[in-house]
Image (cartoon, rainbow, N blue to C red; front, side, top):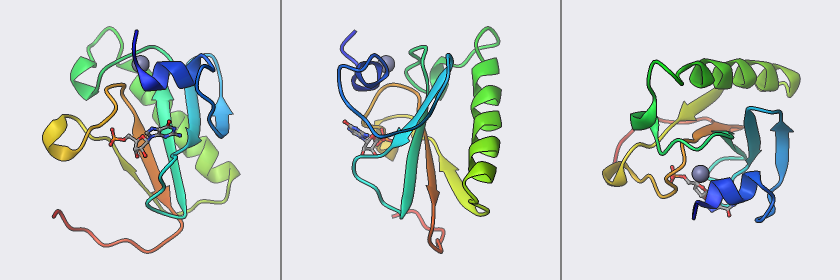
Length: 111
Ligand code: 5GP
Ligand code: ZN
């Protein structure tokens, strides 16, 4: 499948990995918008939240378990998780991913 994040998972495209196990990969965003900007992705390809069903939703809970552990392990006390779903809100990679943003004070606005 011609998916950028599947290529990062299988090593075809290099990435700076933060954490990996059999179900998820966490790596640094190539174009960070905050001092800490990680991407958390399931290894099984899902296009976006729109692909989440009762059959596969356990991966979403697991991703948040990983977020909870990784932020604690890295001393990150305050952070924001974002997932873009669809073109209008800026989803550019069609493989479910959660942005973890931290390391700066953030406002709350939609342009
Ligand atoms: P989206 O806009 O779909 O919510 O997020 C996609 C993210 O993937 C963007 O923040 C973008 O900077 C990041 N990205 C795109 N290509 C690459 C890449 O080749 N490597 C890494 N590490 N991040 C990428
Ligand atoms: Zn993919």
